[in-house]
Amino acid sequence: MLETILWVFLGIIIGLITGIVIISMTTSGKIADLENEIQDLRTQRKLLKEEIFRLDNQAKPKPRKKRNYRPRNKKK
Image 1 (cartoon, rainbow, N blue to C red):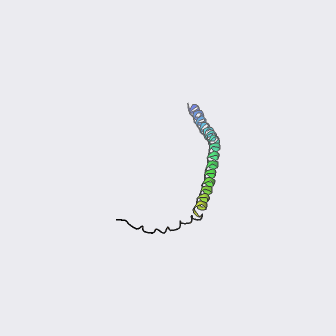
Image 2 (image 1 turned 90 degrees about the horizontal axis):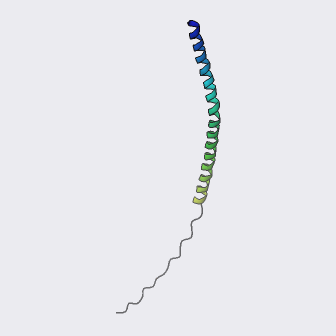
Image 3 (image 1 turned 45 degrees about the vertical axis):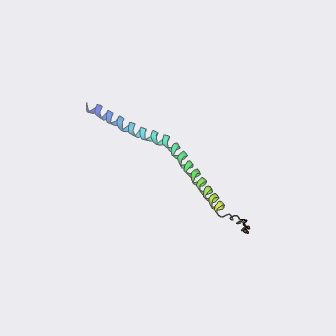
């Protein structure tokens, strides 16, 4: 009876360790992909910021010349 309980306990421990190793191996690839995507998004954000600053610092267009209006003679 005691021997059976020990074998079950040993099987549970070996199963837990094997499960943890398998899960960590399968998620490591996904984590690397997500880290690469984060890096790409940071680079894209940096480039867009530079583009905004570049567009913001361009010279403003020259204002139009003021028109001189002469009042017309009103006929009654």
